[in-house]
Length: 250
Image (cartoon, helix red, strand yellow):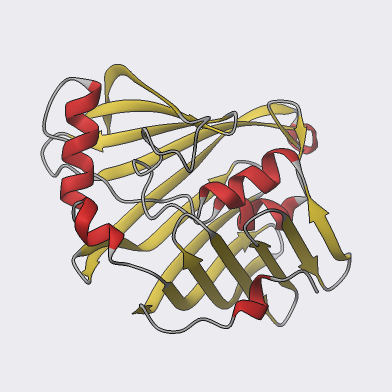
């Protein structure tokens, strides 16, 4: 599978590189700058976000496949703008991935441990940001590009649309004009297994504030023709010590 020409791991790899893209946000104005500033403020504001040094989410996932649902546990650990680690564990498979600050890796029971490059590595790096608007004019993400697209409707509701490219990976964020929350993200991917380019959708929901910062407790990911993934966060721990060894390639 490829994202804009870059090689991406197989089906299991997609859920680790895409599953945590659901950053929260908001908007109250028409211009790009005003929308982004309002989004950051609604997420908690730059000061509150800057106070978060570590985040650890734990919970569960359900993956819908042609062979029936697969259920398991998940863990996500983030050191904002620096490192991230994520794992999906079930009786049928296990997968761990990380961005260690300079490189990315992925480990699976059947394929072993490999270094990730290109879009797969960039996606993990991008997930070190606590929301999709933190990369805007942020020197940590010098290649981030933002643009305001035409407004659209999602589920019958009016939305702002922002087109965000980080490390060459294009995302579209849909921001509800009434609730001021991101309700949908989309990403086009070339998946030869299903005959070409498909539109991946990510739906964040069930937002909750932790130490003043808004985070989604549920993320639904759909990759047409491959699987649906429903991830639910049951516990979030903020600013607790993190075992740095989890980021290191095994």
